[in-house]
Amino acid sequence: MLEVQPKDSRGFFMIPQHPEGAGYYVYGTPTNGAGQYGHPALLSVLFFVEREWLASDTRRFGIGNISLANGGEYGKHHSHVNGLQVDVRALRLDGAEAPVTRFQHGIYDRASTARLIAIFRSHPSVHQVLFNDTSIPGVMPWDKHDDHFHVGVRAAIK
Image (cartoon, rainbow, N blue to C red; front, side, top):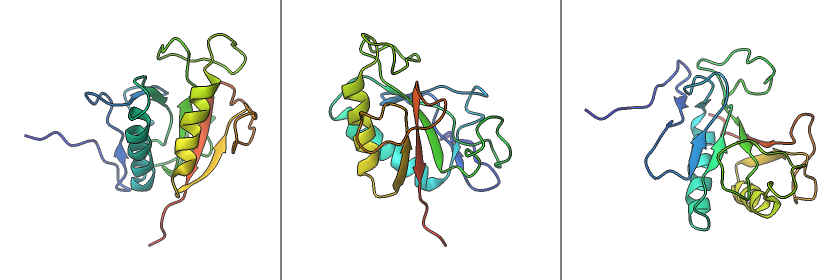
């Protein structure tokens, strides 16, 4: 039988956690995808970015917090309630799938992080990227966003 991703009461799906050959890996709290339920519009953006990223880089990028199943308060992630925001880790020069801050010169890969952000920004649904490396075009600074960037997506209104 074909396994289907978990779906919440809003009709949002958990992003696949360990897809074979994917261009992304997952991280975040709570673990095991419990905080990674995305609106279909956000999932479409993530899969678009993944495809475009894989065309130019073999490293995987990290997808973090999105939304809890059925929405609701998400601790310090007050904007992560409607499945239209996602946190993405900055990239490392060594390719490790681990955190890195923009201050870790020699480990932080600014050029590749900028390229990944540019791919996100090229999607017409993306309306916001928050990240404290303001040398990257199109980002706005935001408190506690030195090791990841936050992407906001618009959804079509029904």
